[in-house]
Image (tube, rainbow, N blue to C red; front, side, top):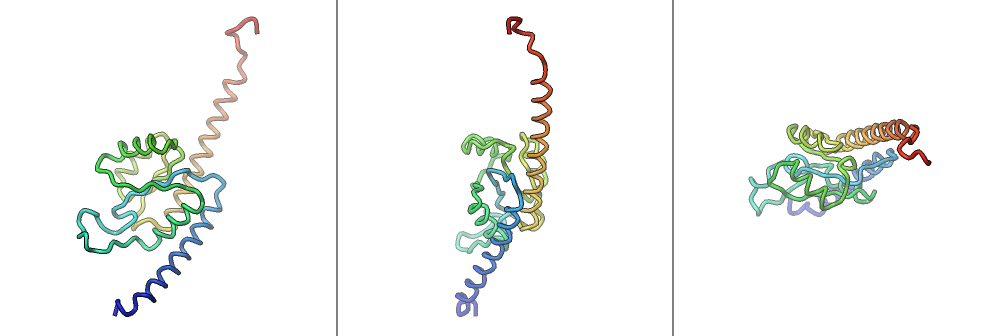
Length: 176
């Protein structure tokens, strides 16, 4: 039955992915400031399994919203980095930071493991979002909302710092 209906199923899947992509584009479009880089854990974040536990002959499948979200992020100019690593997430993020040249506070990280979320969120302002049943439109909205709040807070802190130190009279050079 699946074989005879596969073109229809593929057509329906692509319609669904396009719908998700459209909704993701609307969510993304609602934010003035966006992260420069999206970082996604793989297992139980983009797909519902552990990579190392699957046969190479099995066809992997993403969570329902994952592909549409990834397509929308790409179209909106937000790079995503997906590559495997067997190191601790903080080491992994150091490498991503070095290779991509993106500041930590311009990264959005989605993962299904709270331990990773806690560790990475302490790395220079990475916005880290815990996903329950895989990445979905709700976790995208939550991530962009939190990223925007983090950016606004950092701008306020920057303004406070600038006003505090730029208003002081420079006494280091008496001739000035």
